[in-house]
Amino acid sequence: MRDTLEAFQNAIDNFLGPIRTYLDDEEVSEILINGHAEIFIEKDGKLHRVPEVFDDEDALRAAINNIAQSVGRRITEKQPRLDARLPDGSRIHAVIPPVVKGTSVSIRKFKKTNINFKKYIEWGAINVEAAQFLDACMYLGKNILVSGGTGSGKTTLLGLLCSRIPPQQRVIAIEDSAELNIDYEHVLYMETQMADVQGEGEVTMQDLLKSSLRMRPDRIIVGEVRSAEAMELINAMNTGHKGCLGTIHANSPNDAAVRLEILAMSGDTKISQRAVQYQIASAVDLVVQVSRLSDGSRRVTHISELLGIDSEGNYNLVPIYELGHLERGADGKFLGELKTCGNSPSFMQEIKSNKIPIPEERFLSATKSA
Image (tube, helix red, strand yellow):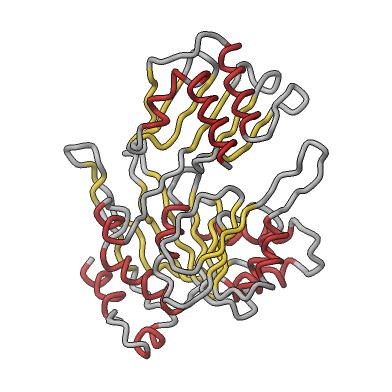
């Protein structure tokens, strides 16, 4: 590991001079290079073009070749894509010609900061009452699917929810690239492995999920559900593993349930679509939608409970919280917060039985006063 880190540091020192400042800047979350003469950074949720450039296309290509070598990979015209995790945890994806006009690179930086609900509330991502509700759901072991688009903050929220798991449990976190930073005592991190240059040694999310079920998990966390491993996660949720979590790319709670269904059906499953729908409706308790708004902020926009499917195969997603009307303030930021929708969660009796101080009136009163 030390040799790899030194090799990568050498690649930065010798080849990545134009972006070195932004790699070191903790406020920069992503670096996007569109050819040697165009560099953008993401800061505070917004993209900014920066003046720095690489000398020419050869200089940028040399940088990517050296980064690939430093992590034991290679990128060529026959293999024009590089997808790797850097030693500091950041993710890099590069594409070279002829797939694109000029060498293109995306570096999503790894943030080590632990996030708690207090900080999440201060950011305006959620309000106190909705945070208390999600905290109660984690305590009760509800299976939660976090849905959102690219860069919407799904992984951040997932790590935050994991930190609220009650003590003395064994948590297994499975990811494509290690991004989760879970503040919890007993966590086993598992990461997929790409095939080597001979096409051997691949370990998929599906492989790791199958292994995790044999390793006495109390809760299974899937960093991102992307493919047929969806069926394994659904099975885990339906076989006594309470409080499982996963993220998925989708633009609404209903889209999230449908996408999970499509991914589950994409494998070699032999059961019918209707059966998969029933499995999902039985497995997933809540869908939490996060979005990146045009002011650069990340917000929780919906918290919905999944209560079965109807006769036509539509998922019955009952809204518990939804983001209210937003108005842009003097500083350009949106003002508004999550509001209850007049629907009590079906597990309200569990909340009462566990003496969790969340009154049922909370879920009803906002609608009456609206």
